[in-house]
Image (cartoon, rainbow, N blue to C red):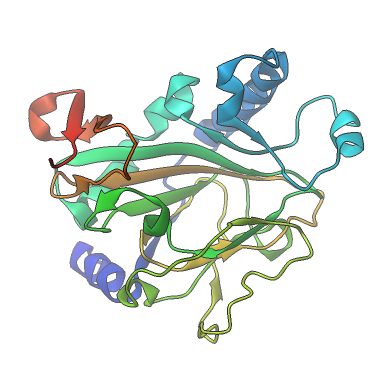
Length: 268
């Protein structure tokens, strides 16, 4: 597709696939870094506040956790704080060229996360819209999910409902669900267009932050490792809930005169 066709497809369907933008060597480096981060998580003392950024699979019992040398992690938040590799990946030139096509030249980073579905234990990620959980308005961010190993139905690839970014914002509740739970228990969703998005390692799925998406359990012997970033332009404002911090400093990924960060202030 041409750039114009890509933008038109994203605006209509709410998602876009960027195939094989990473080299095999870059993917291998990321996989090695994920192993390092698991080892780092295992080294943290129980009282270390950084442990909050390393979330265990919530439905794995203590016996199963103890049977592994490394923790069975569901996700790692704030990856920029723990890894230069994943800090740099957020600004990968081939990726950012595509995000700029969708959002413009001035790009800010809202989220830097690793989503991990450990082999045989990865939980269900119930259908939801990202913006329903984020204090950003208007809800027009672009979420990027980068496959760091091959993802398919058996290890819980992402599924999306094309065009659902046009539905408006809805409430969704708890996202993490046990492996035997369905993708949704709602009866007001049209699931006829629910579409799996298998990806080869080094490819990415970009989707509007109002696109309804989720992922099934990982019943395979292969993990599903995903680097997740969320980008937004300066026209999106910070709208924190009462009691939350009134300012948020975010990285500048591209544009804005070359500055490195921008502090967003909530409206009075």
